[in-house]
Image (cartoon, rainbow, N blue to C red; front, top):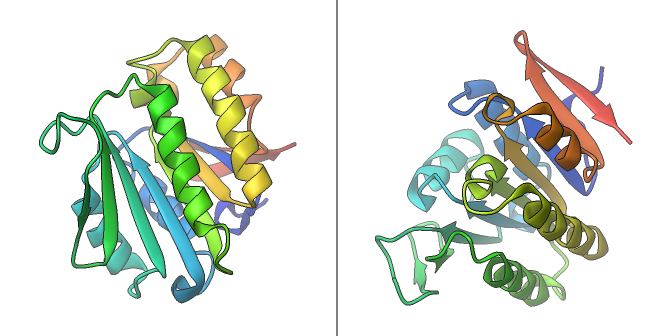
Length: 198
């Protein structure tokens, strides 16, 4: 059986209920596949605060990555005007997108980050947390089109990206529609990961 943490496919879908410690650990393993000092880490988060992600990273990995960027979506505690950038103790850059349904804006922000990193020699990894949250603001076909473009962009840029989806929150048709976009699908079931690759 393939170990999820060993996957280096450009797009990986993690099918697992939220608040699952195995999922959090696998997420961090996928983000920390290399020496952190040679990694660019992009975290797109709808539900978790950048601070809690940084705490998890420090507890699991230790060393800070060379570049750490958050796109915090729907975070109304920050700027209602759109995008803001702030620093943290981990030298992370945090950008916010106040409208979680603005997929065009989200795509532009992700592209800008990839463009900024394209000339450094670091490996780029990304976490999208989560598609379940995104599907509260956009229909399946809209999300499918967005992901089709985004996974293609990640593939072209050599990014290893994983996306979280809660299978209990969606019907089979939605899950089947979205899984077709990914190079690998890892489903957490009965205490272990089952991995399917294309």
